[in-house]
Image 1 (cartoon, helix red, strand yellow):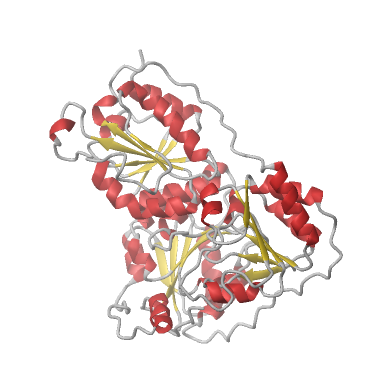
Image 2: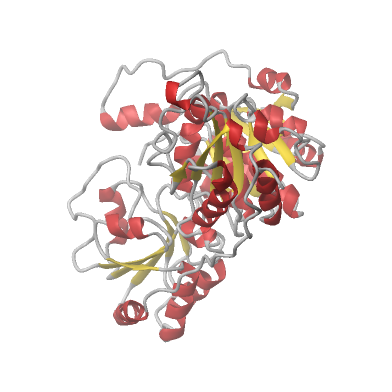
Length: 533
């Protein structure tokens, strides 16, 4: 008879989950012993990086990813990235070791005292099987839960002595559908409201990209001839930025965002919350201008429930947009004016961020994948570098730091394992870089040709922007001098250099993408503090 470990590996193999991210501990070794030759173990040097790598891998492949953590301490180390995976709606399956069942009553060293409560509320399901024989079936359930919209992380705690127990058999790898059609009656009312509107506006959010619905949203927008915006703090994009109807990204505060909606009698929000606001700046009109109707299409019931205004239609956004397009006549209103971008400043040294990103955009490959974590610079970056293809932009929806660098490693591994091999660029601020630099070692060990572009301004510029906005002068510890970004990168096995001019950047990018491992480009930039809003 097969052991629980053998049955679990057979199930993982049948589910196509032969990549395991992790940092092994003693409570995980009984699972990892005799690691199968057809599996890949991706070693991260810290658990937060392991979870972020699995997040990036799951998002770019569109399939659940498996990360193995070290009981309670390893789960604690990974919690920041688990929070981000929750907000990113990344289907990450976390398995964590637990002390042997023979001793859990007396709570020996490395006991997880609350294995099902520790990761809450940032998992869709957490469980510790009652019997060793239930481990494979619990994993099958975890896979189904993580895959269901809204997708997201799940957590299994598994006692270390379960793995050698005799299994009841290998559970069948079940198929569970993941697309739910919207309610027909509610859809009819939405279509009537859109058809009756005089000047509608469309917001295309990250759920469009997760659902693979770019074509459906594009067809609907073109039929309606409406301006299209990205929502604030969007971790993925759902509409091509070079399309003439695309207008940019909405502001992040209530008042300024509401002003952008002024003059539109209907706002159709597709695949996004309503809205992800920060900071608090209420304005005079509330959440919507007077007389404006808001309709939300989302696959997330919680997202629908917490919307402060409007009506919400819950279901697959691709199916909803296709059904709306079928019910609506082609609009005859004039097309919106194309969004314009002001000229970039001259490429003086040190480079202004706008000049840096203009140079980056000029060298950007059409099939490139961008991962970002440079909070003070991201608005300028996205003004210059346009995201025009699906699954080509990834960032953190949680607002925490430490995600971008290891997520880029997971994205690059996903690109390799799917055979697409698209070039990957991560733009990581010099402050963000310090949260998870050990992920560079994993990139080097797997010889991933990622280019990490690090704008260096020796400060937490986004916090200085907040301090100016909130009128809180004198906040300490907002400068970070003396960091040697190339030196840190070389220590982890990466090629690294400082790039000081726009002309040198293009050559450095091409060299990095043609290389057989990761490269880190530290680019000194000017130290202006951008306005928060």
